[in-house]
Amino acid sequence: MTTISKPSVLVAEDEPLVAMLLEDLLDAAGYRVLIAERLDDGLLMAKSETVDVAILDVTLGREDSFPIADALLSRNIPFLFASGHGRESIPKRFDGAEVLQKPYDMKGVQFTLDKLMAKD
Image 1 (cartoon, helix red, strand yellow):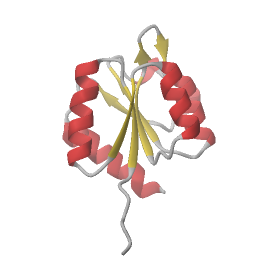
Image 2 (cartoon, helix red, strand yellow):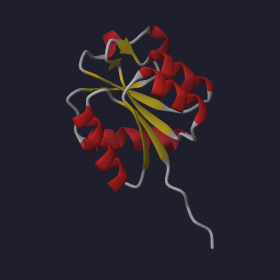
Image 3 (cartoon, one colour):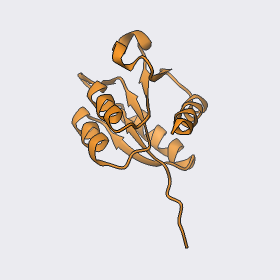
């Protein structure tokens, strides 16, 4: 019997309540969810875990998530940024990345994840 594995989403989010909400909603939508609340955890997961897609909060504490995005790019893993500051807070090298403006709704997250997963 063949089992179909769930697509895996890395969520880099430093706000615990937002991370828990995303985890619950993404799990219900059929994803395996990996949560990273700090840059170093997210970077380790981006480099070593099986990840199909990622949601990156631009700001993780006092650091930004751009090193995680670079690691994902090097592995050709699609991702989106979640930002309360808009696209202008994101370096030019990520011009092709999707950006969800915070606060976002789950329909927007699901739509964007589906779009990113379809690009593979």
